[in-house]
Length: 205
Image (cartoon, rainbow, N blue to C red; front, side, top):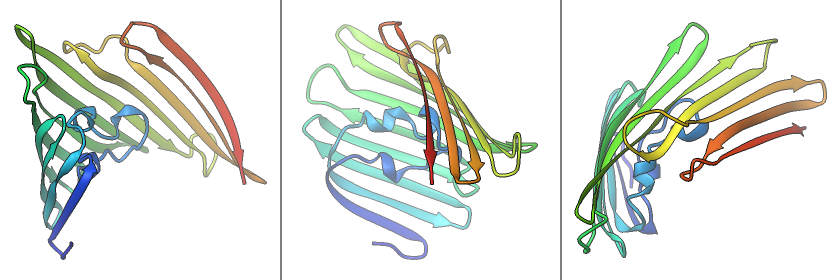
């Protein structure tokens, strides 16, 4: 259900990540907080109230993995958003809380998105602190009119608060007389400290 100022949604057996703001540069792992995905899936209710360029959103969900809730305060049509959430499990371990923010802004001719979230999970004998975040940049008309370069450096959910061993992704899209050429590549780091390098290209008409 939606009005000019209020959007509501009832859902079954799904997650809540799509109910929250995403970064303007939709590339790499900086698009939305990975902690939102970790809230799991279930049945619940979400709502967003808008007042001009500002909005408040929230979601409550119950599933097999436990009960979850999340909230967001966003400004400037989502260019800045503060998010927090909590998942409570029936077990003595696994309950998780997180909080963080993202901000989108322009630097000269480039769009920039910054995101950083921190979490705390209850484990056997104590708590485990973690963080996730990244930076993404999009630049139009780098070499010629109509092309676009996007790059992102991001850190998946990892213990601690550093930015060591981040993922790096890059893509360049260039218009051609008969279509568009896209070249992309990157380095992705696994939790085991192993890294995977990938490269690809595609032509679309």
